[in-house]
Structure formats: structure tokens, C-alpha cells
Image (tube, rainbow, N blue to C red; front, side):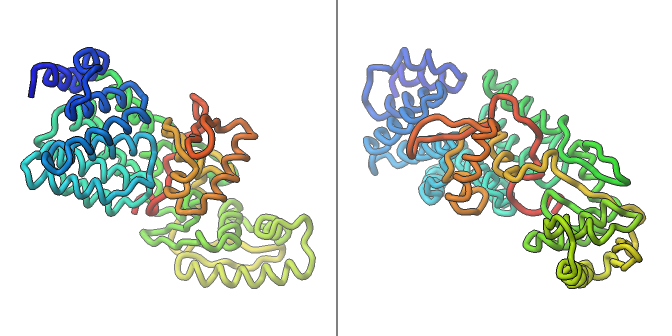
Length: 406
């Protein structure tokens, strides 16, 4: 490797892409193309960066498998940053295997981190934890070690393990300081804000207040009967009952919990569950049927007793009943939750992360755009969406994936 390539690589490792480009800007040999691609990525021109890395990978070909695999890993990192979740994961897995076989432990570990971060984005936490657990962070330089620890932080936050999240974040901060890259330090600080901002609202006895993430963790670990409106589940004494596919039953459970320890009139329950303006006999008959179904779903967790004017919730063992609600009740809060990470997303990537149809996501984005809650740039397949510079609310508990605390 010649001196200019070495100097450019060192500049990129230090987070100085402009200095790197001074050394290799006019060169078109494969190593220079690869380094130019990484430099353009650091400068934010992801389209040009991707093009350069593809050219470098083709130029390296099969004769230099390690260099080609490194280009694939760099391209995968660009795809992750640009939220191109449709990018095939098999190419990254194959590159990681090549790097492991050839003894490039640092880049193989980095490839594993990228795989874990992609899985984390689409809510596959179990797989993400397995992949990250296979990564040995020891050979990683400080900049990549910070990325590893940020991935660990994200998983701990999504699992509502705040102490583990703080420990991983502290390691990420130390690694970022050693790396000396300002953008990396800023990313660490941005993640740290998640632990200091409200994560949800607790509604009890007719009052509500915001909770930090660690308070949510404590609430879910307590003996309270919790109706979790972030995931549409009911939790009590270590047991979770999902009503995510039973919206009417969940609406009844929430209304009864908000009225606890008193009862809730039938007319109120009809309005909450069926969205009817006024209750007639058909609504009351349907209410009796749905209350019976709710009793069956809750099982031994709680009883739903009829009163003179309506129904009342009676938990079997819990001494307190609370509702855990998102910071906002926006209909499209899950879309906003993903966009709140500050990156730009395509509608197709949002659909992949949410596990829903692209057209449903497009309709949600159009409504949110009309309300001024999201903004877009680009056209056609290059169109990307993001929230305004200051997100309106914290969204950790609304991200896709397993139940928080699971």
C-alpha cells in the first residue's frame, strides 16, 4: 500500500474526510475508489459514496477477496445510515464470513455490529442480541467500539434495562472520546437523551404524569395491574395478556382501568369501545358480549363485575391499577417513532420496519405531512421522510419489536 493511500486511510479513521480526499481525489485505482467512497459517506453524500464503493468492489473482484469484502461492509453501513432496509443481508453475511476466514477480525466484528443494528431497527431484538453476542469487541478500534456499545445501548433501552443501557452508554462515550470524532460524540449524546426524556405517561385516579424510561421499568416490575397502551397489552404480577389484535377489548380494558376503583357507565364504555355517539339496545347487547370476552381474556388477572350503572374492574392480586400511555395518542405514532431517530427514511423502509403494507405507510406519511409533523425531500424512489429538527415527543416505547420489558 502506497503512502498516499495510507495517509488517506489514517485521515478517514480520524474523521477527517477532506484531508483524505486531498491525497486520493484524482485516483481511480481500487483502493483509492474505496477510500473515496468512505470519505464521501462521511461528508454525507451517500449516493456518490455507494457508487464509488460498488466500483471499488468490482475492480477488486475475486483476486482480492478481503478488500472486496471490506467494500461490501462499507456499503452495508451506508445502507444502514440511509435506512435502506431492503438491501440484501446475505451479502453482508458473506462478507463477514470471508473476513473471519482471512483473519480480519476488526472488520468482521464491525460487520456483525451492522447486522445487529439492522435487526434492531426492524424490531428483531432476539436475533440482534444473538448476533451482537457473537461479536468480539476486543479488536475494534475506538470509533467502531463506540458503534458496538451504541448497539448494545439500543438493545438495553428497547428491553427496558436502564442500568445496562447506562453502562453501555458510558463505554460508548469513553470510546468516542478516544476516537476524537465530533460526529460520533454527538451521536452518543443524542442517544443519552433517551434516558433523560419522558418515555410514556402514567394515568391513574384521573391524573396523568410523564415517566422516564427507568420509571417505566420500575412500574412494569411492580405489583400494579398495568394496561399498556404502548403495546396494547395487560400486565400483572409477571403475566402479560396481549390484546393487540382485539382493539375493542383493549378499549374496554383501558376505560375500566381509567375509571378504577369506581365503575364506568355503560354509555361511556359504548362510546369508547364502539365509537358510537349514543348507546341503544343493540350496543348494550354487544357490550355484554364483549365484556364476557374480556373476562375470558383476563382470566385470573382480574374480574369485570356488573354494577347498577355499568361495569367495574377488580384485579385479583394487584393493589393498584394504572394505564401506561404513549406521550401522544397520535394515530400514526409508530411511524413518528421511527422517524424520530433523526435519519431520513423511505416509505418502503418504514413498511419493512413496521411489518405493514407500503400503501398504508404512504397514507400515514401523507396525513402527517399535511399536519406538519413530517417533511420529505427528493422525488420518486429517492424520496425520503424525516421529522422536523425538534421531535414533538419521545417515542422509545412505540418502536417495533417484542414487548418492552420482555
